[in-house]
Length: 119
Length: 495
Image (cartoon, rainbow over all chains, first blue to last red):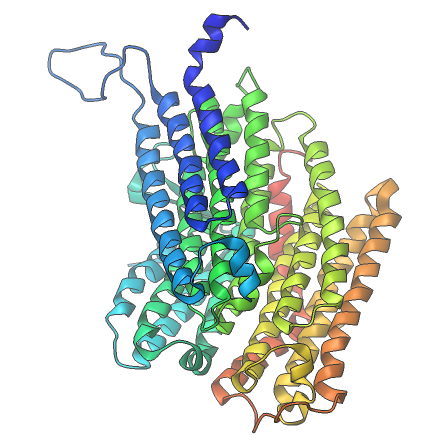
């Protein structure tokens, strides 16, 4: 694989790196809020993958215009899918934070090991 | 107007639309009545579809009249009809019995919220079962998961919160893995419709992304399904949830993930990837066997009755995966039948535990000693469902274990090892079920005994489920017909 090909899939490299950074944060951090941040990064990586795959070189938004023919369009479907996935991600994050708040109220800490010790 | 063709859509829409309406029913009891009525109605829809499918009429529904693969298709065949029956049956039983237990565990003003989340979980799970579209499955999976996180966190015990946080992180990772896999398949085939995917993967020239996708999807769904060793979220989440939520989730939440796992791997990948059957079974069969042995062993020494049964669930998931990993009609039939029978046995057990918990606050096994003396009916139900869990002849659990052993015999060289492990783990199951029975019946009481039986409403449902365990053990033809039609359908391109 030459340099040109490597750079051509630049977005996918970023996807893979961001994905692992997120997953590592979820696993390695003991602070629950940091875990949730990691989870969000992890999910964002997937958004990037979907957005990358829909891009067609020279493609525009898929709107039919009068007088313009043979226009190249980017694929709109992955964008629609990822809008849905973003909503799912936001609701998961909101619920996760709500749980962390309740954990803080009942345990007075958001460190995982201290919570385990408390019970 | 004949509504029959619209049943797959109604199955999801009815609980989903009633969920926000339940919120408005503030007066006590009304929210419960509404939710129970909706669950019963959903069960009636599922039963109707299952009967039609058993007669050979499968359902295929295009949302809004948009043709697949452009629109979103719903389909109900033997396998999904069976899973729908499990989901709606569990929801109906849990909600009918719910009121006394929920009154105890959830404050009155939060009850409409609780029932509303319950119906959302039901809508999500049924949505997964009817969808024929990979992305739609993801969305419904997240709807049901988010609703079940809320339900589990609703319990009075503060330990529910860390448990649910763990479930939330692991569940989200699982769902995101699934999403990555679906994205990769979409990248190569340009479609999200499962049937269309299967047809188009054959034309893909570079098969590597599909292989990676198969890996992501299998791992992600195994995480959701609590396949050993990805089960660590399960015991605490089940043990700390409000009792009635445990009944519902233990009966169907992981099973729906297994359903998607089996369906995806068999429908989309099986006929298209070289050696897929071998990879699928060499990956999952050892996990299933370890899961069966380790989880059964842990359950034997577990002191808290709900955690004990949750560990036993991990072992039972092992049986289901083991049957599927044979890649034969017999194995898949055993798997599908075990989905149904385990839901009956475990749902019944957790219902009976809900009955015990009405009088006993502390559910550690030694605290429950002698409970059978004042709660004979509840204890009897635990015996019946426990024996069904072990697989004693005459109960539902026996049927699927028998099928599983038969399927293992056909499996050739590994057969004796497999049979030995299944029998050994059945002995372990006998050991932990006997520990429960021994404690309930023969040990002297250590805390003040319950003043009487569980409330009538709860007891009635417990009785129905316990009797169902025996009925489906003696007359198993209906679930078996659905199971074997499911197995033939899944392998239609392979055999």
